[in-house]
Length: 106
Image 1 (tube, rainbow, N blue to C red):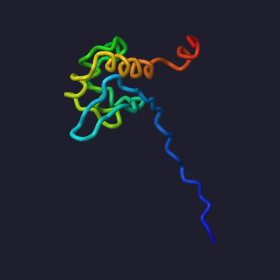
Image 2: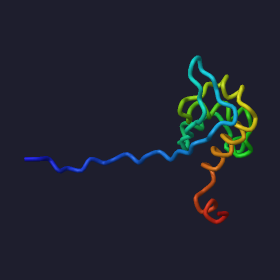
Image 3: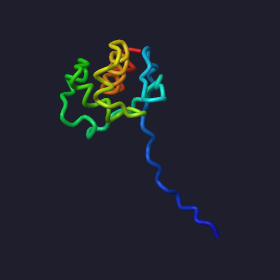
């Protein structure tokens, strides 16, 4: 006899991949791309949503280590190439825009 009870599956987090213009070196490892997860409210604690939408560096430095894979450190975020920070910040800001707004502008 087999149990066919369906187990509720957790929704998969929404992620986007950002390819870095300037890779991050961690010892012998080189990071060339970063996965950014759509943040939940808890990952946004302590920062202003307006600051994130405006891609304020301090807000991104706080939030990116919480939502990236491999997880960036605050020091790595502060040391990013500006072009890479803009790419990552744009991804985060895009996650904060309502779906209807994103679809209307597409």
